[in-house]
Length: 182
Image (cartoon, rainbow, N blue to C red; front, top):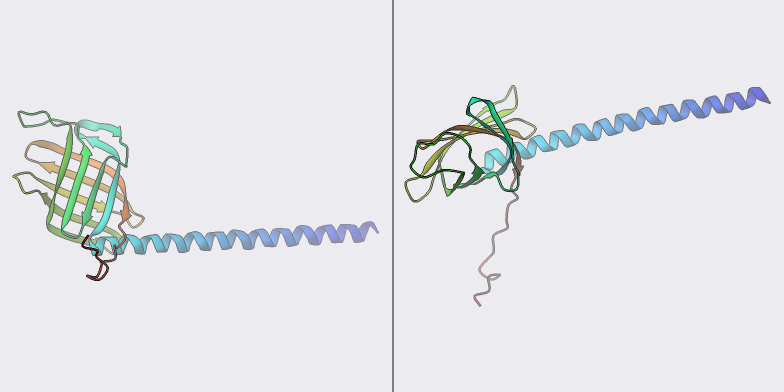
């Protein structure tokens, strides 16, 4: 009787170990599939020029680091439009004090260079508004969506931001029948 009980317990333990291995391999497979899906979303967002970069950290000249609030510090690129809204700390070459960068304008000279072996992208563009303000923006995006952004202008020092990319969803365009004139 003891032998039968030991055999049954051994079979239960062995079967539980095999189901744990199967569950672990299934979870690993799901993580891998999610990672690949995220990489495809990042690639599509960069190629379609529709993405949002939320900044987590600012690195200013001479080694200073400051944590930022991502919902208040961002770069939005929506095809030919661009919005850059973020804090600034550093030296400035203007009469007025500069505490933030807030520019809404066009993304000019947009160039994407992709490094297929690493799966990263480098974007160079100039964000220019209707006035005389323009900022040179350089964004390096890794395949997992983490970003490093450098911003420069004649009136400020170069400043670097760390953040992550969020793809923008396509908005369906309304047909003339759907638009209510009232």
